[in-house]
Length: 203
Length: 240
Image: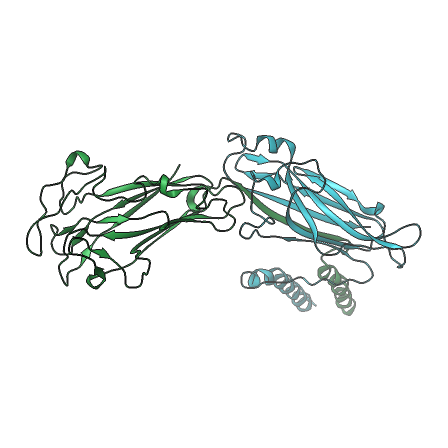
């Protein structure tokens, strides 16, 4: 009896050790690609950064003093720095986007990100059409969007929202940063970095 | 005993999906990291110097004027200097040209005149740079004007004279006109120098560069046959 218990305990410990160690053992010498499938329900959000090439008008890094990133009250202004997609068939879904300021040491630059959201929607007459809108995020904040109000296809058993490709992410400075961008004390020379986090949740 | 073993295995079977399914299907996350800049500092600055070689067989012309023509340079540009920059700030380019010195005889010196002109000194626009030869007249910015030689205000060698193949450097150096030196010696060779400002690349630009194409002229000095002469060009780049 004691031997059996001892063997079982040893087996458990070995299993735990293997589970914990595998990732570290292979982690430094391997790359992975995450393949996702779904059964009935799915929730997908992905963003594709655009690297700036040459003097192109898209991508990053970009010049904070450039006219293409200056603040504008026009809805479609800004520099394209990425594309993104979302897709889910959960009837209730929320999208949370958190964007940090652009940081260079102790200096920070505020900005707006505008996400183009283009999707197939159904009107009251039952006809489908592509609809587009923009959702706006201000850096330094965490903004939650309730996507329930977005029209969706009802011809399916489960309502869906699925954007196509090439949904642009536009960048522009906010009013304050745009006014201060030439001030060396407030916005010193150098390179600035920011991180944007996306969380799509279905219920 | 069997009940205990059965119980443990059941527990393992029940726990297995918990370990395997480690992500909720109703949540998806991703991140975007991006960067921007304002007047990036100079470390990205790069420059390149190319100098063509020439030898006796390249020398042609009259007995009083030897013009170096490189075999492979149909444009007669024996010295090519390229300076590239991706700085947002203006940079200053200081060029120092030294005379040619015999490999074995420090007194066998060739004063050299470098000639350039607007067509030989080009500002090239790349990657959307707004500057071009029409709007930025380098010939007027160049401290020596379109051409410079050892006979202008920054003259450091007024003449090289002597007899025989070696020649002897006479004390014809005008000390008062030396910009940063004194009498000629092996380790203190006078130089001629000039300065140029290359503008920053401005908005939405990637790089800007200037090309100096120089045609050296050795004047009346006759080089020794089968002898190597050396010169040097010093390039100093600084931010404005």
